[in-house]
Length: 50
Length: 563
Image (cartoon, rainbow over all chains, first blue to last red):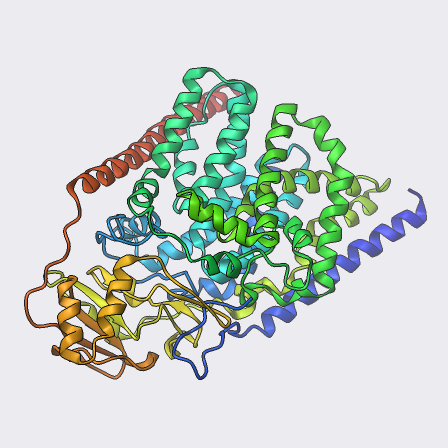
């Protein structure tokens, strides 16, 4: 693996790190209770949906 | 220094993943129901009429929260299951630091963890955490013929529910017996497995006639949710519940996860095969095939799995097919991390190797970013209303069981952010409870199997409040607790002892006599608990001795080092 390989490795590592950090930060900042299920108009709360 | 990095990385990932769940309060989400001071009731001990879905987990919690506050026990369970899975995976793989860190990422930041957290299956998560450690224990048994002293404790922790117990037993026995161990060791292993699983086995046999609804096998079959199910299971994901699946799984990131796992596994398979003993390779391959096979079978042929589950007592645990994917964890971690280490080692310069190492260690997180911070904020602790805690002391234990109304199993209370949860009142009260065990999945209702619940449902069908009270009393129900914020309920005649904004507690007047539990069953269940306690004691004693010997060895080594 020569110079190009090294550059490519750095790009891959940097890209994965960037995607990870952006994903984690976005998820954390936007975090809110979700998956509340269908609770409207029915007394039987759903266990889940398929 | 590098010795502690896998543990540190596991702690960091666990903190990032649980995030909001670690705030004060109880996380109540779907099947994860924790309350202050769970009572050690007869149904918790496995003497109820339902299938033992929370045996022995509830009893263990009931005992532990006498020593440590239940809220803290829940945090310890959540953190311990993730850190345990990560460190176990690191201990399982044979390789350098990068491989061990990748193993941690794969085990902690996993679709399996996200899905089971979201649906609240914490005993399954503890079983998942135990799997790599039991594979390590089995490997040591096969190599040295001795059972590691901590094995009984890990096995007990990994056997707090039926499905987790079966997975734990399979992993330990398959890896240990792959080495042709002595008969004495085999007998000791089998006895430990039997003891760790005895409470739910005995309780399950007592209620073996309760057949699962055929609809349940279709409702709880493995599903890919955007990915073809047979590909989703390769990444250890595939729960039936669309609400428990992270959004990223259905998009390009889900496909990227498949490519990542399959690609790195293909790259690392040969290297792994060469570095691991062939007996262990065969055992891990067999476990993977069983785990993935059951999950795929439940997707491909749910009716056939259902027929099998109804015909053979005990096989009803196959209903939720993707739970078995914990069996695939050891091979997935071993082979994929091996490929990742190979890839990271391709760099000829240190900078390139470091960059590739960063890429492979972070890749499992990059393809599943939306499970961070308590599954994107879904895991938010709450506190039970004061009125609930007060009502608990009104319903006392000398007047039969309590029926919970409205007649449905799940609630979505405002005080829990409208998140669906199995009615927490069933855990909070100190008396045994009778509540609907039907499960609503989309437009389908999966019928429960508890005969006593059917009897209560029939009693509530009586035409007038007095008739309902009489029929409930006849079956041993002396209380009716109505959650007023959860929908409409049939009226039941009796003396109202509490009527607040959230709850109404009605005491049914007249004699109430609970049906007796057969003495033989009580004795059998008692023997099962004694066996479990024996396994715990054996684990504590052998672990304490092991720690003492290790500390003494370290002290003597330190003393021998010249100044």
